[in-house]
Image (cartoon, rainbow, N blue to C red; front, side):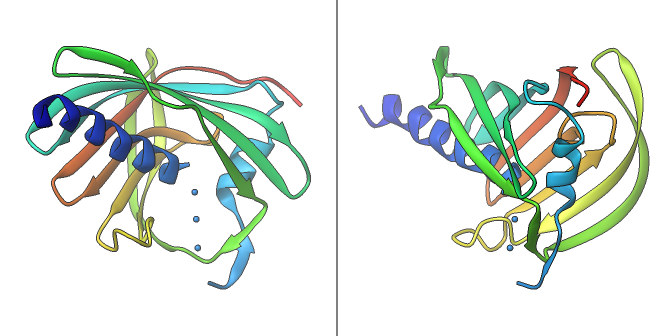
Amino acid sequence: MLRSRLPLRVSLVVVALLSVAASARAEEVDNPRYARWAKFAVGSSATYTGEVAAAGFKGTVESVYKLAEKTDDHVVIEITSTMTMAGSTQAMPVQKVTIKSKAEKADVKELGKEDIEAAGKKYACTIYELGGIMPQAKDAKLKAWVNDDIPGGIVKMEIKNGDTVVTSTLKSFTAKST
C-alpha cells in the first residue's frame, strides 16, 4: 500500500515545485516574471516535457503553462500537468499561480549565457539561479534558461530540493500578440 501511495506523494511534491517555478519573495522591485508573461496576450502558452527523480522513483512529466488572465498589476498562469511514474499516468490538479507586477527582491544570480535546443529550434538563453524559492524548503534551487521570445521566458528549468530533481525543457509554445 505504501509503495502505491509513494508515487502520488512524489507527484504532489512535483506539482508544488512546478508551481513554485511559476512563484517569488523582501524589497519590492519590478517583477521580470510578470513582464515575461504580460508582453503576450491571454491564451499564450508554453508546454514542457521533463523528468522527475524523487524518493528512488523516476518518471516523466508534461506541463502546460497558459496565460489565463492579465491586468496591469498581475497575471494568472494556469498550470496543467500529467505525470507518469511507476507505469501509471495521472493528471495533476490544475494549479493557478498569480504573478504580481511587483515582487520582493529575490535571491537571483545570473550564471552566464548558453544556447539551448528546444521545440525544434536553438534559443540564446541567459541562465539564472534562484534560491529561497520555497519557505518550507530552504535549500531548494531553481536554475532557469531564459529567452524573452517564449511566453513566461523559460526554455529549460531544473529544480532541486534534496533528493528531488525535476528537469523540464520547452516542447512547444503559442505566443499570441497583444
